[in-house]
Amino acid sequence: MVQESQPQIAPKILIVEDDPRSMKLVEAYLLPEGYETIKAVDGLEALSKLEKEDVDLILLDIMLPGMDGYEVCRQIKGDKKMRFIPIVMMTALSETSDKVKGIEMGTDDFLTKPVNREELLARVKSLVNVKRLNMQLEDAENVLFVLINMLEAKDPYTKGHSQRVTNIALKLAKELRLSSRDQDILKRAGLVHDIGKVGISEAVLNKPGPLTKEEFEHIKNHPALSEKICSPLNSMKDLLSIIRHHHERVDGKGYPDGLKGTEIPLGAKILAIADAYDAMDSDRPYRGNMPKEEIKRIFREGSGTQWDSQLVELFLNVMF
Image (cartoon, rainbow, N blue to C red):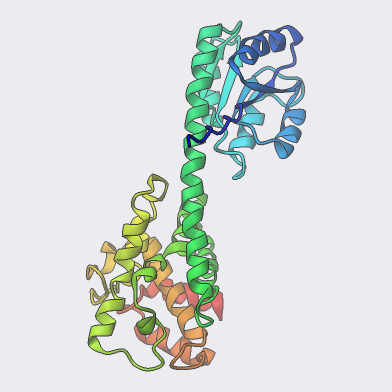
């Protein structure tokens, strides 16, 4: 029996335009092509509608009353929930400086007014496809976040570990004044850094005593496995080196690659400290959580050998 194909959801386009004639013209081009349109006559109305509507693309006039198109674009691209929505600025302005300003605000493309039908439809079709592809990649990434939560939930000793490690790592990142992009990369790396443990025997992970040499070699595979699981996603390419190297040591005695010193990415060094702290501060099958003074002693002893000495000093000041 042949299954009926699911109906395609009509792409939703937000038109932000204060000129009624231009609005009607753009809408007349879009509606016969199967697009759904939402209208706003100024920036504030556009931002308000974006809080309620999930749109696939925004056609944004630059010359708007009150808040101009540049500021609207800046606010949209600065919001994590909306930044992947493509924006096409519509303008009668012809100066290069006007387009440069739009690019600086984050716009994805430009259309010259009065808008040409073929050019408009080509831009819209292309950018809607890009947006939907980005959303599919984001959905795939979210599956990994859910998977790591399910993995940790099976073990009361590690439940919430990745989130706690991430929170600690971000505290250090903020103290270091890393860029918002680098903080976002570190956050996502922290959330999935142990996803490779899906390939590690539960008997080894939950063993209530010391690991044998063979068992430890087995568990040392998890950073490389984490990298392998995440590598097919293009959206995670910036995370891979952090994920793979979060068990390296500055003296070169870590794993999986024996990197040392400056060879280890900063994000991995930060994650290594956060990961070790949470392991020491949490109950484990073979011991209870360690006293704070004991944790501080271990970090001081490992400063400059296991962990970066400057980061250890910063960490101790932030956490104790």
